[in-house]
Length: 574
Image (cartoon, rainbow, N blue to C red):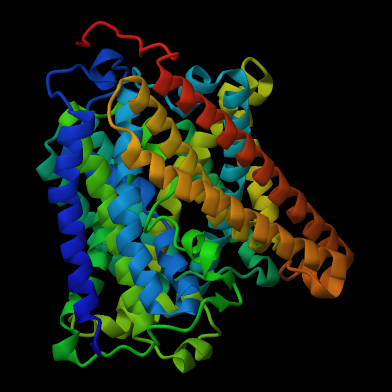
């Protein structure tokens, strides 16, 4: 047990049982997908939002649309309690909760004519429920955007070469999109071209001439963040087949290749001599708070994530060719993301507490150096591996953030209707300006701490919407009702605890501020004011979450009693 070999093997077996055992049984018992039933991709084909896609391409798109920094950075925080509880949550959370939500979100949408969770919530809970959910989602999207813009700018700043490599992969995605959808070239040929272009991109990133550093000193970070925002604006306003869909598809390959490399490194560790350097157990409490509820929101996307339900219901469901593709695409991508969390935990576990302290307790640095240590058997230099893993971090962040920005635009259209705020360029500009200001001012650190709680709470609410649908069509709903209740109670508790932490800091004055530099030193009074803003954000998320929980449980009661009408059928349905 002195190497990562055994725990990686245990998790792989568990995920295999989840997909081929529990997953297949649940599929036959609850959803009963029909390959002959017309999906929304065929009902409403427009080439922009609705268009049928091969399940292999869609699986890659789904994986790269849901897998971000949560399963990479979350296990680092959970390591405060020891690697054993973190490993248990990564396995059990995904086995009993995570994939059921992702798969269920896609199925609920396609069984409701491809509608997203906004109109579905309106149908289940009324106008009040829809407004509450959309308000919660807007808060949530701002929180994600500020955090990811900040982190992408940081990655480009500290890993020279990763910006050029990222730019090369973006161009590769656009070229592949044109070949696939305009020229009608086959998936195999376009994928081969994508491989060649991406290898060239990574190679150029290792050459000093392309390892660009900005000359603006303290403003470097803000400038990188501005460049990120410009790329995200383009991604938000262009049609999906032109930018986001092919970019996410090609990004899947280096992103998932990194996971395979790290897991192979863990499985080869008895031969390579890389050993565990972290304790299995540290205790029930840590600087992040008590294990329950904080560890269950710290490891977000690797076990379960509310973001996945937005992707599944708002995007993937509109591209699904046949219903039976939903299981390999939804459940398969979620379990694959569990492998990312597993690989990240392995990368942290082989570094000693002293090595992590030498890296200034940086989760980003620890992930890159741990991954490099596990994969020294590859025929590449340590410097080349660090460029590769640094670029992979950017890919995981920017592909998801592109979708977050687009969803902000779509949710704004639902919330503001005919107002100018709903216009796509205006809403995109606002959706990037607010997070950019938060990111460059340093206040993102406060808001990031709410990310885990709000993300997992959204997952609990999504599970309740899935449960309501199953109850009204008289299918078994207990398998999602129990996980939904656990997630809602846990996440509301986490939000309340974090709000209390910020309230204590705000009441203690500027010296105890949670705001980062430069505001912390340059404007302590402003930093203290932002602590109070963080308290208000926490309270708003908690109140909106409580209201949504009450409304969804009331709707579930109506569905069970038969008081809720059956879903509307359209041409092509049974």
